Structure formats: structure tokens, C-alpha cells
Amino acid sequence: MPVDFTAIDFETANSSSASACSVGLVKVRDGKMVDRRGWLIRPPAGHDAFVEWNVRIHGIMASDVADAALWTEQLPDLCAFAEDDVLVAHNAGFDMGVIRGACAATFVDMPSFGYLCSLQVARKTYRLDSYRLPSVASAVGFEDFPHHDAIADAEACAAIVIHAADRWGAGDVQQLAAVAGVRISATVAPASVPAPAAAPHAAAQQAAVLAAGGWAPPPLSV
Image (cartoon, rainbow, N blue to C red; front, side, top):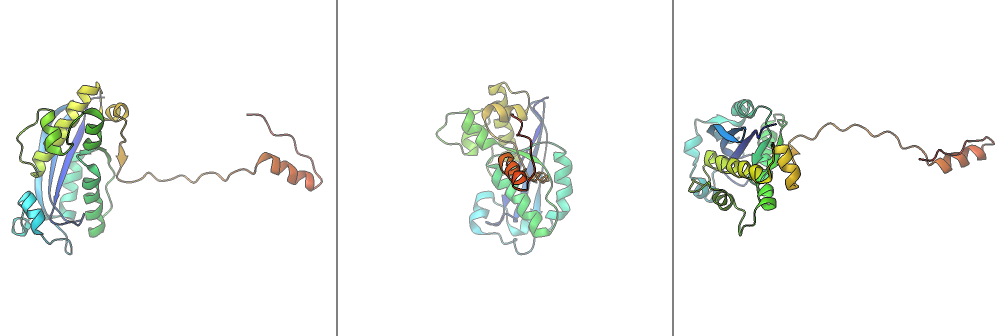
């Protein structure tokens, strides 16, 4: 299988995971960036305050998203772009938390994706003083990008995973995760299958039968 995935990055209006105000998506096919998209998002009511700290980081203000699509309106486009890809993000727990938080705040089902954290991959692959996105991206040759622009950050994330896969000699992101010793997690846990009821211990079962005046065969050796 080729190195195929979709890199994703969110910017948020405030500390709420539901406050996504921008998303960047980069499609990777056979180890190459082949498509990219990004758009502004209007956060849902109750999560739509733009705090000064976040605005200083990404430069997006409330007026910029006044006419942007709501989370529920843009989610189908996000899923359509990602298709069935594994999502890759730098510090993926944050970005998957944004999807989870925004879906919960807008009462829509969480989409099901596998995801891989490029931060974890980088820590297993490179020896660096810092594993922040700009530092790792620079180390793999992706330099001078506008950090906290969602599309640019997704491109940087993609560049890291492409480089790491090549360095490990991995043929796809599943193999990369395996050789680097990291997990591909899931946004939605698979349905659990109830475990069969545990059988009584063989010795206890035999004793119970004997106590009742019957006979039980000895347990089989395993």
C-alpha cells in the first residue's frame, strides 16, 4: 500500500475544543501532497468568543467568520475531502478533540476516522531539541511556512510524516506506525462484543458435582 493519508489542522477561537474557526486539509497520495483545502468556520453559539490570546496566535477575528459555514454545514465537506484516509495531525489529540468537541456541541455524530500523531512519530524518528511543529518541519526541510495558518500547518505535518515514512522505509502509514512504535487510534471506538461468561473453574465445578452425589470427568490438559 502507498503512503496515503490526509493531514489536518484546526485553529480555535478560544480554549473550548468546540470553537474551531479554521481548518486546513492536505491530501497525500503515494508520498506526495496532491491537494489541499481550507476554510473558515463559524463556531457554535456558546463557544464563539474570540479571545485575545488566540487571535494573536492565528490572526482570525470574529468578523472574519461572520459569514462562514457553521460546523454542521462544513463537516460533510471535511469528511468528503478526507474520504477513508487515516487523519494525521501534529499533537493529534488536540485536533481530534476539536472534532469531538464541535460535534458534541452541535449534536451531530462524531465521524469515524483512524488517526496518527505526527508529534509522536517525530519523537520516535528524530533527535531534536524541540518537537514543536516548526522545529520538526524545519528539520525535514519544510521551512519558512506561516505557522498557525491551518493549511500551512497541515502541509508541514504532511511533510513530517512523508519524510518519516521514507526514513523508516515504511510503505504506508500503518507500517510507519508499527515500525516507529506508535498507535493509529480511532475517533470512534469500535463496538465492543460482550465477552462470553467465564466458565467456572474446573476443580470447583467438579467439586460441586461430587457434592451433589454425582461424578465429573477430570478436566482436559491444555
